[in-house]
Image (cartoon, rainbow, N blue to C red; front, side, top):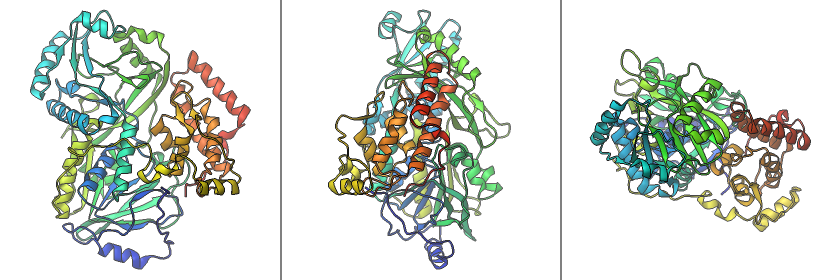
Length: 606
C-alpha cells in the first residue's frame, strides 16, 4: 500500500485543533476518543506538523516498543508508535540473534533464566517462522572452573531447565570443529531468531489492524497539565537514517513548531536512551529510570562453522557465545560502559578479545575470514545504592509508573530485558496501560500466531509493476525492465522485484537492508551498492512506481549512507581478504559513481 498520508497543518495554524485534541484526553482513567486516521506507516520530514490523538503513544521502534504495539493492538486500543530513526535501528538491530533458553543466566540470575525459558517455549509456538531451532551447547574447557558446573546445574534445575549431558564422542561427531580439549558438554534448548523479520511482520500486522507508525519522528517533549502527562510534542527529521548526525546522534532539528499527539498514556520504550527520554519530563522522571548504556561488540564470520549455539560453561563473560545464523556465525559479545550520547563502534582490542576467546572453543575460526564487526548498546539496570555495571548489572526488565507519586500520571517507562523476553515485557506493560486507561483487556500474544510477511499486507499486489504504474514510470522517464530472475544482491539472493516492492510500500533503503540482508553477504555491498542506484531509479525513488519522481541527488545520498553503514563494519577487520575487498569497493565506487559519497544532502520520502 502507498505510505499513509496525514493532513499537514502549518505551524501558524491548528491552535483550535490542538485545543480539541488536548480536551480528548483529560483523565488518566479515560481512553481518548478513537482517531479517525487509518492505520499505516509513514516517514516524516521536517515540513510535517503532526496532529493526532490516540489511547496510547509508544516512543521507540525496537522490539520492546513494537512488541507492546502488537500487544495493545490485539487488546483493541488505538495506538501510535514513534521512532526517530528506522525499525530496529538501535539495540534490536545489533544483537546476536540468540533466542535464550535461560541457561546462560541459570547460575547467576535464576529469575531471568526462568523468564527466558518460559518465553523461549512461547515464541517457539507463536513465532515458529522466525526461529531456527538449532539447539544449544554449553561446553567446559580445562581453564574453566569445574565448580561452576555444579552451580550452573543447580540453577538450571531451579529455573525449570533440564540440560542433557552429551558424551564427548557424540559431541565431536555432531560438532567436529569444536576444540578436542572440551571436558564436558550439555545440550539446552537455545535457538537462533530472525529479529528483523519478526519486527517487520509485527509492525505490518499491527498497522493492518489499525495502529499508526511514524518513522523519522523525534519526541522533543511531553504535553502536561495539572493531572500529569497528556501526550507528546514531535518533529520530523530529514536526510538518510544512516547519515552522520542522524537520529540517535543528534540529527537536524527543524525550525517549525512541533506537532502534538494527545494520549492519556505515553510509554517510553527507548531502551538505552530511556533515561534521556524520561528526562524530557523532568529530573524526577529520569531518576526513576536506573538504566545504563553498555556496549557489546560482535564479530561475524563468513561461514556457518557450528550447527548449534555454543556457550562456555562458566559465569557469563566476554567472547563466550557462538551463534549460527543463516549462512554465517556470530561471535561475541563484549561489555563496556558507554558515557554520553554517542554510539561507539568495536575497538581493535575488543575484536582481538573475541577472536582469542572464540579460538579456544573453535580452533577452526583461524581458517574462516571475519566478515565484519559491529556493536550495539544494551540497556542494563543498575542496582540500588552502589550501581552494578557491565556483567554485574541485571538482565531483568524495569516497569515504572511515573504517576504513582501523583505528579506524572500517564507516563510509563519500560526498559531492560532481553529480545527473548520482549513478549513478557509487553504483556506486563500492557496490563498496566489497560489499568491506567480503566479499560480491562486481556493479553492475547501468547495465543495468536505471528505470520511471516514479506510485504505490508495491502502491498502484495506490487510485486509486479501494475499497468498504471508502468505508464506512470514511462511518463517520468523510468525505463521498464523484466524483473524475472533479477537479483538486487546476489550474495544474499535478494530478488529485485521484492526490493522494488518494499521501496514502493514506503521502506527506506536502510529498512530494506535490515529486512532482506541486502549487502550483508560476502562482498558487503561492494557489488550490489552500485546496482541499487539503478533499482532505486527504476522505483522512482524517493517516489514510488505508482507516483515516480526519481531524484538523482537523493538516490546518491541514500547510497552514500548505505555504503557508510557497510564499510563501518569492515574497518575493524580490515586485514587479509577484507582489506582487499575494501580497496575493490573504493575502486568500483570511483569507476561507476565517482565521488558519490558526498553527493547531495538527500530528500525525504513522501
